[in-house]
Image (cartoon, rainbow, N blue to C red; front, top):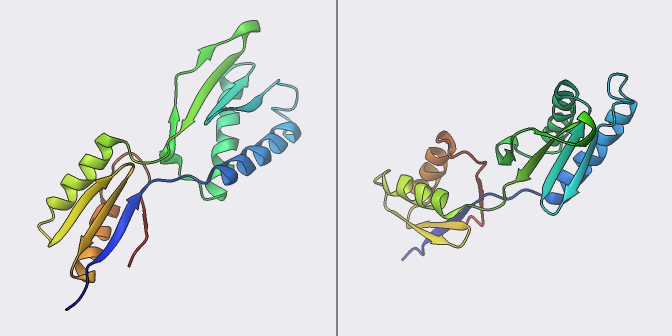
Amino acid sequence: MASDASFDVVSKVDLQEAKNAVDQALKEIGTRFDLKDSGSRIEWEKEELVLASKDAHKLTAVIDVLESKLVRRGIPLKNLDKKKVEEALGGTVRQRIAIKQGLTPEIAKKVAQEIKGTKLKVQAQIQGDTVRVSGKSRDDLQAVIAHLKAEDFGIDLQFTNYR
């Protein structure tokens, strides 16, 4: 008798890679002609990035530099939650960008409902910020992975612990 095969649906961001990307972006901001003396900066506040610059145009350039470095480091841009641009002291502007980690309960429910809607012989269990999918057939599990990759849940999904 075959044992159940399973995998986990997660959404994780490697924060060390994100910090490396921020360091690279800061180096580029310091050397770029249009941003050199603009007072642009990127800082960490817990699990959130704070970007600041002299005006909205320079802030957009800083965001472009940061996003290019994040993509090169394998950080999905879907997991960035950009807040609105705020006015700061001295006529500067700033923007906060939160990095989403894990599946929220709402997204986990959507993923589980989407799996049940495939009508395949698999079970989906929500376990904290992950969804465990198990079933007898590995082919069914691979079909579920392909189906979930085609859907858009607003964050990047990874499939781990496949056995």
